Structures are given as structure tokens and as C-alpha cells.
Image (spheres, rainbow, N blue to C red):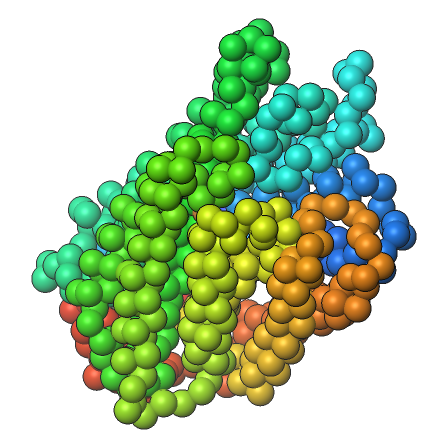
Length: 534
Ligand code: CU1
């Protein structure tokens, strides 16, 4: 039996049905689907929190929230989007596509795969418990909710009530889930490739996930260690981060950002992998310089691990130290610039068409590059002394992460929806979604650059009346941006329900002749013709 035949046997031999099919699933497609559904729910949850933030900030003064509730929402918006929406959505795509792309029958460790997913709803539950702790629990402490921001720096995080303990537990569970999923992906890629599928023949999406998985294994334990030390400081009498006991709160910042900076690449790289599939397809040309893309990624990974303290220029490091971190950070623009160049060179003189996935892909190149340029601004020490903790930083990282991570995932959803559901999505609605979403996004975050440069601090519920106009624009943009996702949900539901025209085996005519991105067994059409989800 060839690997292709095995792949079609997913649901034979008494595989569980009904709810058992999902709860006990060891099938990579079903688990991938659950990841994607979970991620979309978290996207809506995190998005509603973002809209609450923007509703509060639409005018100066306090209209809706108290400062503690506002800070609690700011913290959890970030955590939910990063750990609940982007990472699980990327993991869902990895589950669906990696075995198919390398000709494997399933993930290498299917039961571990099941565990990795089902830890997520548990983490979501403890995260919501943490959010509601101030209202539900009384452990003899005055609990404000986690009002520290997602970076949970001590000494403030050492003083928060029980909600902080729930959050630390949530981070532990999320960390276990990510590490297990990363191990599974690495083992699958290294051991389960079909004969003839050499490493350099692997599609870029598989490569990006291999690098992402290694990054996760390298940095998640550091975050877990950091929050464990914080837990010990809080309850077991240690003083890792307490100056009064001989500790140093800045140590936590180092541990956090040793995780936090590579985490940006964890969010980013799977989307770069989607670009590597989408741009050649709609340019009708092979990917330009795939080897150099893989090498760039390796360089990006190494550099990404040694630049963390650019988030901490203001803590009073020596001039030599900050200079090192500045130069390292600016060096990152070389591999990233090379990637952008490769994608543009792929499009160059191609027979391009502009279906929804391609619109998002081009949007990523334009807007993510813009976010990269403000990143270079922030990397420059004297400039950062001015921009630090301002709305400029908020604008910068949303330009990096929404195009860089979210739009790559949207491109992937529209690119692969026909494969997943067997139906073509409504192209007109897809384009409408793209334009409303991109319009809303830019209206939300572009004005925030000016707010930051003018001195509006981030993470503060109120602001000077001089900042009103740009905040009104930003809030209106965020409502357009948020509401546009109802359209995305509608488009997806239509496909899942089997409405719309049937997808062909090929789906994208532009993928014809691009065998380089397809494994020999199984051929492109076999994994399309046996979708698990009807
Ligand atoms: Cu960073």
C-alpha cells in the first residue's frame, strides 16, 4: 500500500463517529479543522476586546470602562490574539497541509496531536477565569485583574491578585500545547516524507513550519521558566525579581523578551510559508530563489534569538550593550528584505491575476514592509527613547502582525478553502472582504503613528484632548475592521454548507505545472478529492 492509499483510509476501520470523532480524533484534518474553528472563535473574542478598547478611546475621558478593566482587556486582547487566534490558526493549517504536502499518511504522533489541541480549550477556560477572577473570587486580596499588559513585568505582576495565578497557569498550559505540537511537526517533517521528497523539495510552507517549530521549542520553556519564577516570588518566598530580597525585576524582562522577540517570528513565519504557495500560483511562475528563502529563514531564526533587549532600551543598559542590540536588530532587515525581494521577483513578469488570496499576499508585501520600516525606526536607540511606550509602538507592531501574521492566514484560508470544503468561495464577497478589511485596518492603525510621535502614551485609558481627531479616526477604522469579519464568517459558512460552485481537483489554474511545490506521491489532486469535511 502506498502512502497515498493510507491517506485515504482516514475514516475506515471503525473510526469514531459523532462527537467522538472530534474529541478522540487522531486525524490530522479533523484536528486541523478544530484548530481553525477554535482560532476563529478566539479571533472574535480578541476582536471584541479590541473594539471595546477603541470604543473607550474614541473620545478623551472615560466613557465605558474603569482603568483596571481597561488594563485587563488590553492584556487579554494581546494574549488571546497571539496564543488563541494566530498560533492555533497557523497550527490548524500545519495540521491540514503538512502531511499532504510531504506525502505523509498523517502527523507522526496522532495522539499527541489530539492532546496538543485539547489543551487549548482548557487554557481558554483558565484565561477567562483569570479575566473574571476580580468579580468571582475573593482570596483575601484586592484583585484588579491582570492589569500589567501581556508582558506581565514585575514588580506590578507580583502584586496582582489571584487572576495572575490563573494567567500563569494558562501560560503553562499553552506552553505545553505549543511544545508538543512543535515536536510533532518536527518529527513528521523529518521522518514521514514520502520517498523522493527531499528536504529541499519541500514546499516553502513546510520549511517555514520546521523553523517555527524549532523556535517554539527553543523559547517557550524560557517563558515558562520566567513565569514559574514569578509564581515562586508570589507564593513561595523567593526573590528572583524582588530587589528587596536581592533579586532584579529587569531579569524578568530579559527572560520574557528572549521568548517574546522570537515569538514574533513564530507568528510571522507560517504566513510567509503561505505567501510561498500563493504568490507563485497567481503569478504562474515558480517561486524565485527558494534556497535563498530557506537560508534567509535560518539567518532570521539565529538573529531573532539574539536581539531581544531592543524591547528594553530604556532600562539603563551600558552603551556597548544597547549598541550591540541595535546593530543586531537592524541586521534583521537583510534576511527580511531578501524575502520580500524574492516574492517581488516571483511576481515580476508573471501572468498575474488578483483573486482574494493574491490580494492579501500583495497587501502583506506592502503593509508588512511598512511595519518593518517603523521597526527600523524603533531599533535606533535615541529615537526609541522618544517612541518607547507610545502609540507609535502600537501602530508599528500591528502593522507587523496584522499583515504579517493575520493576512497570511487569511490568504491561506481563501487559498485552501476549496480544498478543505470541496467548494469555491464567492470571489466577489472575498474581494469585498479584502477591501473593507484592509481599509478598516489602515484607518485604525495609520493615525496611531502620528498619535505616538505627538506623545500619546500606550496602555492608558485617557488622553489629552489634543489627540482626539486621530483617535476618532482610529476607532471608526477599528469598527469597520472588526465588523468585516462577519463577512469572512459568512463566506466560510457558505463553503462549509456546500453552497457555491464545486471546486475542481486543480482549484487554482495557476498551480498547473508548478510541480516543484507538489510531492510526487500523492499527486496534487489526490488530497483534494478526499476531503474529510463535507
Ligand atoms: Cu523584538
